[in-house]
Image (cartoon, rainbow, N blue to C red; front, top):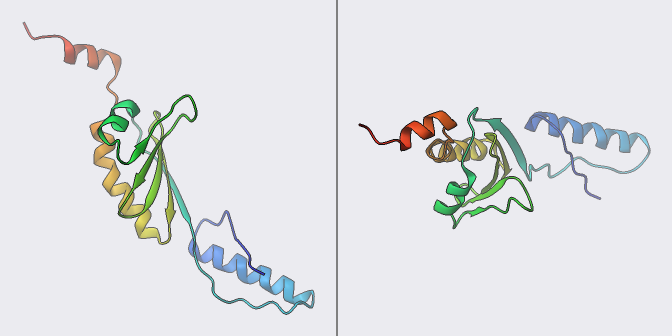
Length: 135
């Protein structure tokens, strides 16, 4: 059979966990072998430390975005290259998933960060000042 390892914080931890489990199964007299180890999905998360206007982002990036706040509070952004799915929340928290290698996660964040800055939610006082015409 096959085995899935979840919850590891690094590629090496996932590999070690799989090896240890195969060893446990061998000690129970089953002919287990540790072969074809492969990372299928990596998940990363971060906080950009500023709130985000999800409606504006969803509108301007409608080809990549899905935002239905009645169903789920986050915007789902499906990046094409690298093929990563991001969950973006108003709070500024971001979850990146679908990577096969660590660099895909980093690359996706580097690409989305300027977009998130563009849709940074201004504080109410700053927004009111920005809308007030100069006299």
